Structure formats: C-alpha cells, structure tokens
Image (cartoon, rainbow, N blue to C red):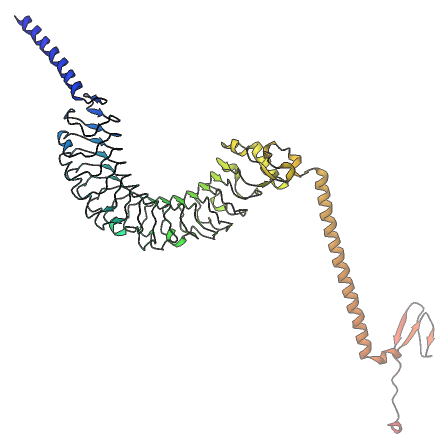
Length: 521
C-alpha cells in the first residue's frame, strides 16, 4: 500500500512539473525568451506594443528594448520584485504618474531613445531604491520643481541628448546621493549653478555640448566633492577667476573645443589636485610663462588642434613637475618648441606626442628622449639635414614601444629627400661629415682665428702706446724750449771748450747761467 501511494505521488509530481513548464511557456509571449530559474525575461525586438503582464510575477529583470510600446499604464504593478527594467528604443511620449508606485526594489531603469516630452514630481514616485536612471535621447525641454525628489538612492542620472533649456533651482532637490549627472548635448545657455547646490556628493558632472552665453562667478563652487568636470564644446569665451573655487577634489577637467583665447590661469590656479587637463581645440595663440601656475599635481596635459597657437614660452610648464603625458598635436602654426620647455617635467615625462605640427627639426636637448616610453612625431614637415643626425642615431638605438610610428616619419625637405622615410636615408645624405680631418680643420681654424685676434690686439696696443709717447715728447719740448740750447759731448769731442766727454759716454750739459750786469738792466 505504501509503495502504491509513493508511485501515485511520483506520477502526480511529474504531471504537475510538466504542466507548470507548459504553462510558463504559454505565458511567455512569442519572440520573448523567459528564464524562470534566473527570473529574467528577454523581450527585445519582439514587436510588442504593450508591456506584457503574463510573465512570472517574481521577475527580477525585464528587457523590452526595440519594440513599439507607447504607454505603460499600470503594467508594472504585477512585477513588484523587479530590479532591472530596460525600455529603450520604444515610442513612449510619457511615463505617467505613479506608474512605478510598487517598484521599491527597482535599481536600474532605462527609458532612453523614446519620445518623452515631460516628467514631473510624481513620475518616479515609489522608486526609493533606484540607483541608475537613463533618460537620455528623449524630447525633454525642462526640469521642473523637485522632479527627482523621491529618488533618494539615485547615484547616476543621464539626461543627455534632450532639448533641455530650463532647469528649476530645486530640480535636483533630494538627490543627496547622486554621484554622476550627465546633461550633455542639451540647449542650456546658462550654467544652473543654483540647482547644483543640492548635489553635495556629486563626483562627475558632464555639461558638454551646450551653448553657454557666459560662465557665472562661483559656477561650480558648491560641488565640493566633484572629481570630474566636462565643459567641452560649450562656446565658452572666458572663465571667471572664481568659477572653480572650492573644487579641491577635482581630478579631471575637459575644456576642449571652446572659444578660449588664452589659458584661464587664474581660474585653474584653484585646482591644486588636478591630474588631467584637456584644453585642445580652442583659439589660444600664445601659452605664456607660468600659464599653468599652481597645478603642481598635473599629470596629463592635452593641447592639440589649437589652430592659432604659434608660441609656447619656455617657462610655461615650469611648475608642472609631475607631468607624465603631454599631447601637443596638430597645431598647424607651431613651428618650434624651445629648449628648456620640458626641463621641469623631464624626471616624470613618459609620453610625448608632437604629431602634426609645423616643426622642421628637433633639438637633442629638448627632452630626455631616452626616458620616454611613447613618442610620436609623425606628420611634421621635417628638414632632413645635419640637425637631425642625432635623432637618426637615436632611433637606430632606441627601444621605444612606438618605434613603428617613428619609422614612418618622412622628410619634407630638401627636395631630393622629400617623402623619404627618415630611417631609410643613409646618414651621409643628411649633410654631416664627422671625420677626424674635419675636426682637426675646425680646431685649426679656431686656433688661427684666436691668434689673429690676439696679434691685432697687440699691434693696436703698441701703436697706441708709441703715439702717446711721441705726443708726450712734443708736448714737453713745447713747454721747455731752452732745452734746445743744451751742449752735447760725444766720443771725446770738445764742444764749447768747457767740458770734455769721455770716449764711451755722452753727456748733455746745460750752458752756464750768465748774470747780467746792473748797467744792462
């Protein structure tokens, strides 16, 4: 009897198991892939126009991208344990109000690439556990009062590629845990500085590809935890001195493709811990001495596509002693980098790119070349002459990881070497002849030149001295004319019958003084 009952139980179990699998398959919509063990449903590209409500109510992850869903209504009340929801690339124009009221376990929601035009402070009601919200590539125009206030756990918010032109001062109120905010590619004309004051723990802010009329004072000073700031392609012409005040934790700053005409030294000076600065694609003409003053922790500097740049002061980087990577590429007016420009960085510099400038030569003392791990100097109009022999030898002996780049360096001058790879040219064709004879000849010429100069100098000195003595004698004779009446005795001859001169001497004797009688006076 007992064995009989066990058999009946096994049969019933097998029947129920088969029936439940069949039921699950029946409730999973066509074109969907449902995994009841992992509690995941993949309904991407399934031609759905509504959210299916027949899936496992204990579902954890639901993927509905690339369908034709226009509305969600109250479809998600069935799935209270949902943690991940992907509804990208649909046709939704609105998310309604309180449609996620029961999704207090939802952590990631993506509704990007729809046609959502507006959201309000009830749209996300109930999503108290949400960590990531992607609203990019929609048609949002404004962010109203406390629109995200219920998202108390939100850490990442992506609002890029909308049409946002207005942000309420209280729009981000309640987002105390937000770490990343992306407002890229919208229609903002003013930095919403007041709205940012509600984001005390923000680490990354991306507001690139907007068109700011001006940058206000203290624009980002409330974001004291900020570590990464992207301000690229924002039509910025100048940056106030106080714009980055209090950003002591900022590590990365991107100012690419703006309209800056000079390095904003005073504003940058507040960023004591900045590690990476990108200032490419601006209208800077001259990089002055101490341009990056105060950036003593800077490690990466990119200054490429500066179409007007023609001069870099040799002291421009003198305070940036920790620089490891310098990218100085495609600056078409930059013909020369002075010796000493990279002296302060030589101890740590490992990556140097001078590609695509207008440099005709390189100096052996520009940088400590042997310390570099990466070097790129392609697409410069090099004049392959004697000045590049040292570099030719360096390339032959170096073990750079980018040696294949350097082997493709070609000559632009002289005409007979145009388009020839530098490495393929015999050193003798570079116009230098470093033989012993030439060295001896050089030494001889130097010695001859020095001797000639010395002889000329001595001759001029002697001539000047003789002239001086002659003029002195004439001057003395003009002062004492009576000296011409002196009597000279020579070789034993008697002159004036008074004194006789010895045969070996000559004595000049003044005539005796005659005293006139009183009668003659």
